[in-house]
Structure formats: C-alpha cells, structure tokens
Length: 129
Ligand SMILES: Cc1cc2nc3c(=O)[nH]c(=O)nc-3n(C[C@H](O)[C@H](O)[C@H](O)COP(=O)(O)O)c2cc1C
Image (tube, rainbow, N blue to C red):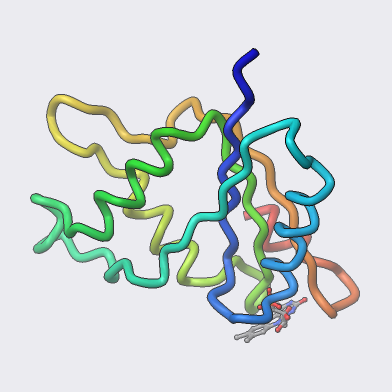
C-alpha cells in the first residue's frame, strides 16, 4: 500500500528550534507509517515579482518537494502574535501560479498546523492566522 507523503514545514530557521524539534518528534512517532520529509528552505529569496518568472532554482526545488507531498504539516512559532516572516515568504511563493499551464501548488492540499512556544498562549494566534 502506498504510504502517505507528509511534508513538514517549520516556521523557524533556528538550528535548535523547538518547532523543528517538535517536527522531528512527530516524525519519530509516525515511524514508518508514512513518508515524512522536512522541507529545507533557508536558501529561498524574498518574494519579488521582478524575479518571479522564471522562478529561481531554490523556488523550483521547493515547489517540486511540495508538489510530491500528499499533505503539509506546519510547525510554526509565533512572532509578535503572527507566524514568522520566513514562513509568510515561503507561502507567498507557493501561493502563486507556476506558469499559465500549472495552477498554484497549495490549492486543495490537506494541511495541519502545530506549534510550540515558551509563552503561555502557545502559538494560538500564529496558528489562527
Ligand atoms: C521576533 C520574535 C517575536 C516573538 N513573539 C512571540 C509571540 O508573539 N508569542 C510567543 O509565544 N512567543 C514569541 N516569541 C518567542 C518565541 O516563541 C521563541 O523564541 C521560540 O523559541 C521560537 O520558536 P523556535 O524555538 O521554533 O525557533 C518571539 C520571538 C521572536 C524572535
């Protein structure tokens, strides 16, 4: 039977990120019941419509990984009651049509959101956005 392909996207670029650790813990719990991949996207540029078409190589690579996934699981911190700008930037890139032949990648893709924070409210506001 085909394994479900889950793509974990962590909203923190920090090496020792709690959210990254949470994603790795989820991976451990899931074990071999699903294919679990963590998206690396430190190298993507800021969204800039001047460089949108043709897309930079880093964006093409990230899009291929997202396209392959059956669903996305976001693990995000909260920055000033929102999710971090690096994640917003990634979502902005992914939200755009690839070309006039291919639709945006995120439309219709199942998604889940988790988050961890040393703060009392967890990451509820970030997740709400
Ligand atoms: C710019 C900035 C803003 C933050 N704002 C919030 C916040 O609104 N709520 C919260 O619970 N924690 C906030 N924090 C603390 C983060 O939750 C904490 O640094 C957390 O460890 C970041 O996630 P990470 O460990 O996955 O990198 C903020 C941290 C930074 C750097």
